[in-house]
Each structure stands twice: as structure tokens, then as C-alpha cells.
Length: 592
Image (cartoon, rainbow, N blue to C red; front, side, top):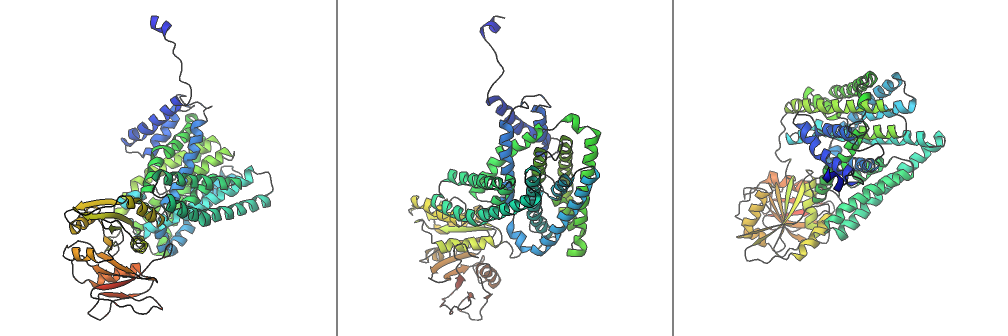
């Protein structure tokens, strides 16, 4: 009693306590739910329910801070989805992607729209329901990639279909949202949406890359500035979309696609984007979704009935689309199963469109809860069946298909790097959707110029090589290169070697991967250098494959004994080559 009279206790006020509760859920929710072998996303949704107005009330219904931050998380989720898409795989399998994308969007869209009409939805709500059921999120793709099947054609087709289905879903969302919220007629709304999409495409895919290259090239060494620039790009695109009455998530997704080539998936900037997204923004969005879950509605028979209808429409459409790949694309049963498991998870675009539909009054709380049931079921089912079908995929020969997976770009102790050499390394890496790993290699007594590392990093970032320069100081440069190649598990090495010092030092080093020594860069399109194969001997197959990846023309293996390989661009006189010299086509900035 005495203590109670002396100390006056009050309930916490201000933002500290809600944020404390929020981040406790973000930390504890996934950890607890994953012990029961459920995806962590379910723990975040249930955590939001627990602390929300329909649970313990720790974050009340009047709180706007968490929902507002959740909206930023929604933009972030779609931005990262655009960044992570493997556009190279989409291009390589564009025919199969086009066929399957059409089927995996139209069939669930049709089934979902009919289901919407069957449960009494109006045209706008039914079309929005159909479009969100047609989308999918690549939740299980990391699992497939870890099992070594990420380059399978069926997997590439499913990944490519994500671009089409998510983009079409967001476009349908933009049109439906504009018609529902706008006060103008249908023609005016449609015209505004079309003009807005044109402006958004121009802003994201024409202007944004130019600004990105300028900013990253000028301020590329400031890592915090690079990350903030990515946020500015996301928010600017979202704001531009909203100016024309289009949902901001469309702009965020387009911004991610526009920066896809400039932000490598294994680069430093992407690592920071994924870190902050996975640690803060995206979990906050998922918890904010949990805040609107009403258990009394969730267990309502009507909610369960809607959920059952949505599951049948979504899974039925996706299953039929996967089955049709057998007659249309000649896929085998394991590939059909992988496509189905890849495209049934409903998360990012589905959740985004559902929340927007709820905000504009097209969906009720029961519909939102029914979609959440669909999401949970799809995540659990896909996590269970993906390993089963993936293990049955045919084992593909790797032979020369991984030369550009991890390319080591070697600089000497003086840390000088010519732009053309970096472009060659980047071209080789892009041939396998790989990464370039720049390192400084020097002997014990060699001087290293640390001040020039930062300038080189800025140039590399401008070329899309977003990695910090590593340093290897060893007994000799030969040992340093060998250790660096082994440490990074590299598949090829590119060395800027204008005076031939590296070539002489490494001639008998027996590095286990092919090495490209770039000596001369002419004023035209040619770069001359030497190639050492992985066994130190002549290997025409490896050299031919390396050169074809770098050249814009056909590479041929000559009959003469004085050289290993010559690449002859169209309209270029045959250059002089010496013993073991190879001439490569130089890749100009921004070109393929």
C-alpha cells in the first residue's frame, strides 16, 4: 500500500508500447509456429490476431501507426517481388512462359469470377476475386533452388508466369479500383487508368534506370545512400501510380521490375533490401493483416463456405492449367506437379488485392477471412508437395552450363581496373544469371591502394556489379588467386592483366577453373587476352563455350596451331594473335 501511494502507475502511452508488442510478435510468432512445421507467415498472421482489437486489444482499433507502416510493408513486398524475378529465365523460356501464363491466369480468373457470381458478388467484386485467385507468389521457389532444380525448364516456366499473372492481377486491380472509387464514368476511368499505366511504364522503365545509373555511378560507394535510393524509387513509383488513381502496389511492383537488372540478387544492395524487408517491413504488413482477422467471423459457417469455394476455384484452375502443359508443351508428370506446386501459393499479390478490395468496400470481413484461409491452405499444401515432385524431376547435365555462375574479377595490388574488363566479367556472369566477385590479390610485399577501391566499387555498381571489393594478401599472387577462387567457389576467373604479369605468375598455378587474362583493349569492339583452362592444357570445348558467352558473333575453333580460339565479329578485320591468345568482343556499357 505504501508503494502504491508513492508510485503512480499508468498504462503505457505513445508509440513505444505498440511497437514493442509488434516486434515481439515479429520475433516470437514465426519461431513458435515453425516448431509445429507450419510456415512462419502463419505465426505473423496469428500474432496480429492475438494483439489486435479482436484479441487481447494491445493494439487497439484506433491505432493508425501500425496499419500505416503495414501499408509501406505492402509496397515493399511488391517491390521485392519485382526485384527478385529471374528475367533471364523468362526470356530463355519465353514461348513456354507465354503459353503457360495465359492458361494459369485465364483459367483461375474464369473459375474465380464464376465463383464470385455464384456467391452473390457484383461484377467488380467478382472480377477482382477472379484476378486475385489467378495470381501466385513464389514462396517455394527457394526450396526448389536449394534442391538444385532451379534451372529446370518447368521451373523456369513457372517463374516466368509469375511476371504475367501478378502484373495482370495488379492491372485488373487498378481498373476495378478506379471504377469503384472514382466519380467519373466508365470511359473516363478507363482512359485515366490507361494514361496512368503509360506514364507509370515510362517513368519506371525509361526514366528510373537512367536516374539509377547516374545516382549509383556518382554515389555508389555510399551504401546507406544506395538503400535509401531504392526506397525513394519504390515510393516515387507508388506515388506516381496514385496520382492517376492506380493502387500504389502497381507502381512498387513496376519499380522492382525496372531495377531488376541493376540490383543483382546476390549483390550487397539486394542483401540489405531483403534484410530490412524480412526483418521489419514485410512482417509488419503481415501482422497488420492479422489485426483485421475476426475469429467470430473466421469460424462462421459462411466464411468457411466462401473459403471452400475459393479453394476449389483457385486450385482447380491452377491444376487444369498445369495439366494442359502435357499436350501443349510436352511436359512430364513430375514437371506438371512442380508447376502446380509453384503456382498455388497465394500470398503477395493475393493479399494485396484482397486488402485493397476490403478498403474500397468490395469485400467484406468474411471475404477477407475466407481469403486468409485460402492463403494458409495453399502455403501448407505447396510446402508439402513441392519436395515430392521436385525430387522426381530429371537430372540435367550441367557440363558447360555453369561457367558464369560465380565469376571472380581479379585486380592487382595497384587496384586499377579498366571498364571493358569489368564489362567482360559481367557479360560472362549474366550468361548464367550469376554474379561477379571483385577481389584485390597481392603478394605479401606488394602495396595495395585502398583509396581506389571505393572508386572501383562505384564503377562496378554502375555496371550492375553490386559487391564490395574483397582483399586477398598471400605469399604470392598465384597462391592468392587460387585461394580466392576456392574460397568463393568460383566457376571462372577474369583478370585485368595489361602487362602479362598475372599470366606469367599463374602459368603453372593449376587453378581449378578457366582463367581469362585480358591484356589489351582496342578502341573498337575488341579486347585481346589469353585463356588458361582448368587443367593448364588446351581445352577447345571450354574455350569455345566461354567465347560464345562473351561474343555477339559466332565463335569458331581455328585449325591453326598458333592459337586456341578466335572470335571474329562481322565487318572486323582479323586481328593479329600470338601464341595462346584469344580475341574477344568487348561489351559496351549497357549493351548485350
